[in-house]
Amino acid sequence: MITIKTKEEINIMSEGGKILAGIMKELEKMVKPGITTQTLDRAAEALVLKSGGKCSFKEYEGYPSCLCASINNELVHSQPSERVLKTGDIISLDLGILYKDYHSDMALTVAVGKISPEAQRLIRITKKSLKRGIKKVRPGNTFGDIGNTIQRYIEDQGFGVVRDLCGHGIGKILHEDPRILNYGKRGSGEEIKPGMVFCLEPMVTAGDYNIKKSSDGYGFETKDGSLSCHFEHTIVVTKNGCRILTGL
Image (cartoon, rainbow, N blue to C red; front, side, top):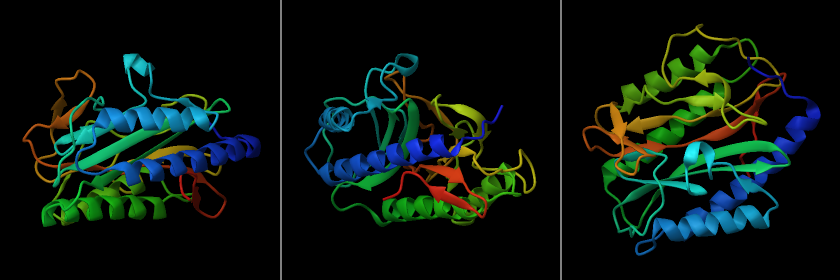
């Protein structure tokens, strides 16, 4: 069942979302050649705890870390390690916080030093696909309208849209209804209504869209080894459209 959040709940989630966005901005600044993903994870957890929040992902379904840090062909949910970032890599950072009993979730993909034109384009197109999806978030539209818009834009650019993972509702539970696909047909799915809060998160590949489980047991990566990219925002539906809760 899709929950409708009260004004008070939305205010709390807005506060938490701004905190999360600020933390992500700090982590983005830290990304550079020579740093390990474990260092980024430690920084993320310290910032979350300093804010008065808790790490949403830590111990969720056994996940041992605060931050998900996925490099190059790794798509999402990769566990931080002593792996060192090098020039030319791209890294997707995915972080959730629990603040005053409500979750917020956000992801972005960052260049490590100078990256290839292909990687630059992949990041640009994925980020733009999220913006296009967000523009479809308004009362009366459906979740299929969002997925269709994201899919058509990404595939028109020659990239792949991941089918096996999706966006989700969010609130007191990290993953609530509905499941929000990044592909689909116009007019399909549930109708979007004011007070809904959910996460849109296009996951895009430079090659084939099929993915597989990573060797760490938590992450997912592209089957063909192609680059992948991930952006995510937590959004609330308003009477006339929507508002990004994880924006600054």
